[in-house]
Amino acid sequence: MSNDDNHGSSSCPSKFTSLYIANLDAQVSEEMLILMFSDFGKIRRSVLAKDFRGESRGFAFIVFENADSAGRAMLHMNGRLIGQKILYVERTPKVEEGRDIW
Image 1 (cartoon, rainbow, N blue to C red):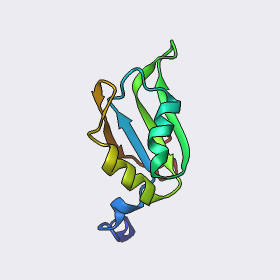
Image 2: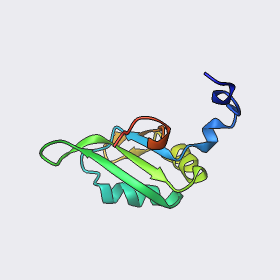
Image 3: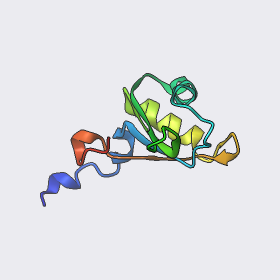
Image 4: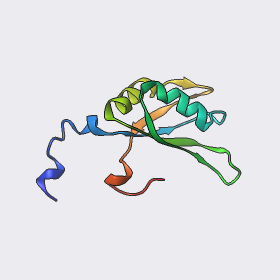
């Protein structure tokens, strides 16, 4: 492991652009998700996980164009009541940073 892995670790949280959203109400569609999160900035990609019947599995991934948008979205949406459930929003590695989550 190189020193580059730890370099700038204090600023690391500000560089993420991908979010994992969990505990989604079954009534929340991908379109609704995009509308809710687009208030914080331009979305590059979004995926609402669905089962074999096409119904929501209760989680999604959103990738913003920039880190500021992702940070604001996480700050304002985590813990928010949407439908009958409280959202859990956290940062997640980008596809380029590791495994393919899509």
